[in-house]
Image 1: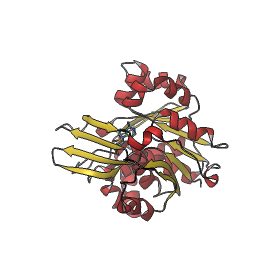
Image 2 (image 1 turned 180 degrees about the horizontal axis):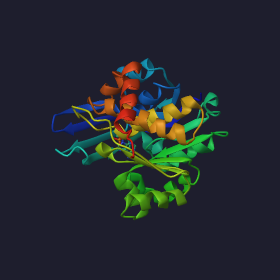
Image 3 (image 1 turned 180 degrees about the vertical axis):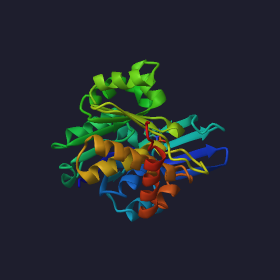
Image 4 (image 1 turned 60 degrees about the vertical axis):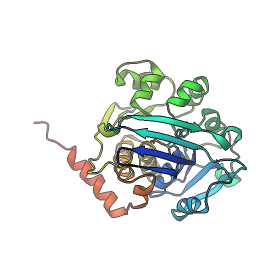
Length: 303
Ligand code: AMP
């Protein structure tokens, strides 16, 4: 078993869906990831919040045994993001992104974090992802996520950090944006040439597709009855997947495939409530049952 270090955003999110809105809810890529991966292994967060970040939000993370020694508190405002979903919940429009305290943030890893075996470079400025990597002694697993904002604004830095990554998670549209390829198969192959040996393409309600060293693997999303808020689904998928791989302590074809099933199951809880609410309701037995039923759903006899 290996602990996971995560660097990413800890945010106050304002989210609008056809079913309702929330303002200043606990969010951010590191929050969703940490609450998900902590179901499997201890998680340590490297991020920054402002002095407006409430005790209650901090307690939510701490209550799930997320180690917050690397969470800096800076004077100023916490990172804020606002997004809106239309009737097609696969489509989201970013209304605003305010970097705030992230504009001047530089991660300084506590000594106890530097030996981390597994690291998740969640969606944040690639320059910060790189600074974290530079402070680690020799991680056996480096996983990266990103989004359109960074592909557009920090492309060179992103390509540099990608060369140091084993496993890359990216959503479908962003894989096309990064490579210029129309087909997602070509996009995944193109990304492998940039560094990572395994690429997982997240496809929202259509599931996820992986190109590993061995070939292709694909899983549907776990079908949920009520889809309330897709925000954080990608980071929760990553948390379940990397959490499982870190718990196993090895990244191979079997742990990647099973990890994707865990990621799929965890993400299905995330979308059932607004913000991180769905993740807080996960019970181990029910989660394992969703992983088993995914295995049932995708099994078939070819003859
Ligand atoms: P996901 O739905 O998995 O893509 O993640 C949504 C989360 O990403 C939200 O909680 C946002 O706070 C966070 N987020 C949005 N834009 C950015 C950005 N440019 N950098 C870092 N985090 C972001």
